[in-house]
Length: 239
Ligand code: ATP
Image (cartoon, rainbow, N blue to C red; front, side, top):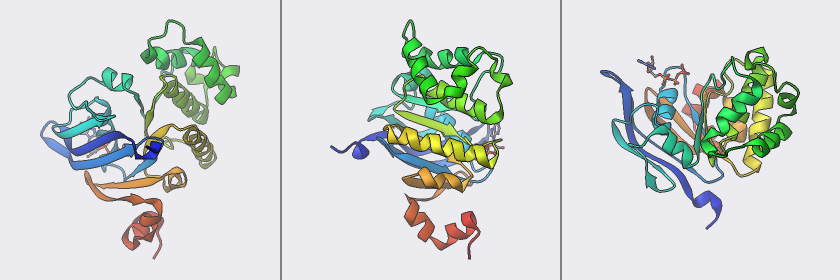
């Protein structure tokens, strides 16, 4: 079977919220092996809430979440990580820990006594982090901190990396650098689910889901999205 036809993640009819407030309404989304899926939506659309329900940080009140065909809707976050799904939040790193300590924390999910080889491999991908390995994460620039966040998430050797707004707080130049790194990771076969409001990430996406008011309003390929006049107007400002 070609890798892109194997379903890594299947979310079906997910409802979630906080207390009496329902935020997500029947959200369906899937990611196949090696795919890059963009979850596009404005502030408050429910992107973070959805990602947190996928990775088990908040409960899905209805619906189901499957990883590699196995139902994980009621399992712990650590179980989902062991099954190959790693979450990178907007903050992504522990500022008081050193760069190397952050990466080692990320590798804990592997359960290796010494993740040294994996750490070295990641320094190969992000040489700037090797140069500063003993410095506190708080001493890094915003862009470097994002690189560390990605390295920390990759340390767990995920099959699927779930990222919450990797562009948040970055200058346009660093956003381009993050997009370049994500393209490289995609080339290595990693599947990505990226929640964003920055349409620059369409460049790396194979499919797009648009979330509005906690509901999926569109799903399809990037070409299908750009062919849709209403979406073009809303997201590209084109008439
Ligand atoms: P942003 O880009 O601003 O992070 P988002 O699309 O990720 O937006 P969410 O953060 O999921 O959206 O927020 C969706 C809704 O849920 C918003 O109305 C928000 O105010 C609300 N919300 C988010 N977190 C909580 C919380 N911990 N308690 C109560 N309401 C929350």
